[in-house]
Amino acid sequence: MLSYRYEGTKEEPMLIHYSSTKLEKILTNERLLKKAYSNDYIKLGNRLSELRAANNLNEIPVAPPPRRHKLSGNYDNCWGIDYSKNDRIVIQPIGDFNLEDLITITEVMIIALEDYH
Image 1 (cartoon, rainbow, N blue to C red):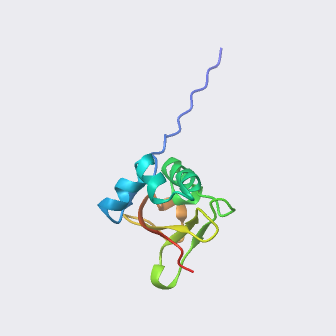
Image 2: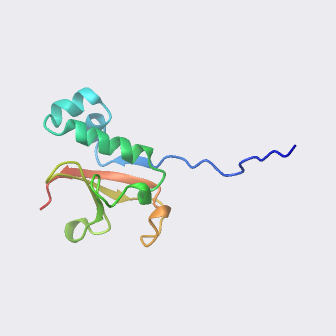
């Protein structure tokens, strides 16, 4: 009888940091999230769950939702993730990574939640 064993490695979820303690408290507490973002808290909660479940930035789809996209200008080297028609989660990679290979981005900081248009 032949048996096969999967020898792959289990990837760790992406590490998420926050630009401020206040932002971390809001985004990690459902009650505070609902209070601060009452109109969009369900969609925002879904995007945050997707971000927490991803192993790297490449696993966040470019198709809507969540529509991951590279930013420029004031947010050079950052990405935006849609959570409403106009509002975005702005994330910046940290740690060791290659900007040309999103699989290497396994640690991010949530910089802001805003309409930067």
